[in-house]
Length: 140
Image (tube, rainbow, N blue to C red; front, side, top):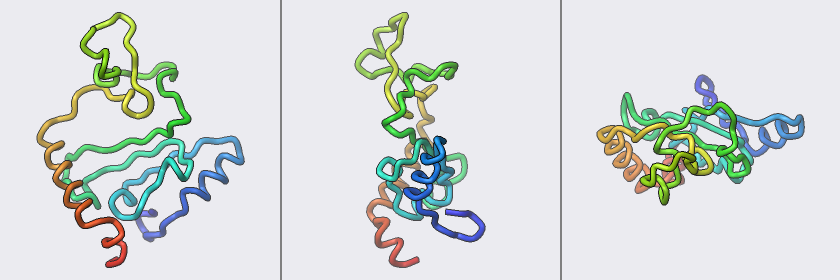
């Protein structure tokens, strides 16, 4: 969603056009998350990010989100700054010299998220889900 005009772009068409040129599609979904239905994976978007303080109502300083399509193996990215929270949960506490990272955006986590903003975000998501994106769209 373009922030100034409110135009809602077709992510699937953007992904198809971008991939036809041999490029990757990354989207800033700050004005789309919580505002319009998103199917980033199904639409073929390669990666995306968004904030949660706008249409997801979690407030200033809230946690942001990131998406990496499953077709991209983030575990093999060179030069990536990685943290303990990106390790596979099943081996995280083994403290191996060769950590096993999780696939996707989860493997790129650096540290634990701050507790209070996560509580606010969880509640904001709960309220948003209870209202449903379809009902919100019908009123807009």
